[in-house]
Image (cartoon, rainbow, N blue to C red; front, side, top):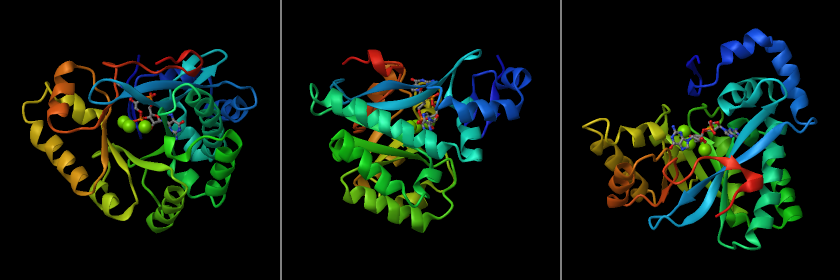
Length: 270
Ligand code: C2E
Ligand code: MG
Ligand code: MG
Ligand code: MG
């Protein structure tokens, strides 16, 4: 397998093969049809509290391609971003996620769901009203929903996006800055965007135990979060050593292979 360093970092899916089999044009055409052909799948990865109790999950998108198999998001989200298809794909993800959440909450009232959102979606004039409609139709509690915005994609119009985010918070929705520390504007975003949560990027988490001087950076991230009154989620927790290090320093929630891999929504259990 080829490790391709794309916009989203290392992609373990062999995208060069994918491009050999299918031209970018074919791929784009198929991506366009994937929604009507119902080829997208939602996977859920559990999030736990300091007592390792499952409190929620993150929704992670996959593409069940008819000949290529299960395609990870790093191989098609960038194309979806470039073509604008992320708008309709993202809306579908939100709809499906909210239908699932409403159903799941009947038995697990405190369960929450985090959904990844592209900054391009936030720039859509209808985003807030569309989401409001989804929330009304599905009857989910807005405060059980968190939208994750990755700071790796540069936010074009910070003031506009920030005003949209405030409207979402007025609805009760929680907002999270994903992949914290990997972009160029981490600290500036904390000041300018209304946020409830940050997610420490898995690269920092995986430094714990591998890199002797990891402590100062993670301690600084946690101190900054405390200062801004933000909930902290650690992503990519794989070892007990990483979990214990973070627990000792007050990280609130944990997500990673140590607690569970992403699994199909249909079979998700807690
Ligand atoms: P993300 O939001 O930062 O999601 C976390 C990624 O880390 C997921 O990769 C997850 O499977 C992986 N991960 C979780 N725990 C571990 C661990 O312990 N070790 C390792 N090595 N990896 C772990 P995934 O599912 O491939 O998603 C990649 C990215 O694609 C996501 O990063 C997110 O930015 C994007 N994405 C996924 N679904 C959507 C979506 O519905 N909409 C949008 N706009 N982006 C999405
Ligand atoms: Mg995320
Ligand atoms: Mg993340
Ligand atoms: Mg990440």
